[in-house]
Length: 266
Image (cartoon, rainbow, N blue to C red; front, side, top):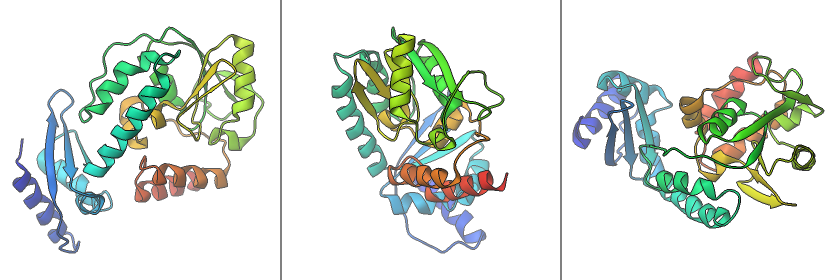
């Protein structure tokens, strides 16, 4: 794989040939995952990261020039924030029904790349079909959880689930009280959904947003598990949801704007 100076030179060349300003930047590290043919570029700070990404145009050209399947850029700050969240959440789940997440958390601490071990979560689970429905199901399967799926009628016509009452806003901001009650009715001790928090324990049930807890961004999820757009949702709630992901460093602002535009266009 190319060295840091070679990749920096390629980025400069792509920016220069396509009318981008000659902005200085610094790459601290490059990691290559031969198993997935993925290149991870670790920039010094977030402004350096933005220069390399170049509104997704530069990074696309870089991927083609390098001939790899995927190129992803992080900053050292991104990774440090992720590690801090993981350390905090490791203490929250230790000694609880979510302790099976600890081997995954240990691996995520060393990310990138991502090499999850085989894990079996021995806890009955309720999956609510919220925005990242396909990824939530993929996560439950990957961790060998026994799970039931529920969701709002017509929201995900290509996915199978038991329909429940709910408002379109709940696709983006799940109603935790409704899901808590439903989980207790079904004997579930864990609820997976796109909650606006990482993890919460209420009345003997764990409410978990696994992607916030593990600090895995939206487009990483898309590569890991795929993505199925909901056809029913609240437009204002979508904007709030994207803004929250951007604020938490789980989505780039330009990617968020593009996603809102594509979904509103439908």
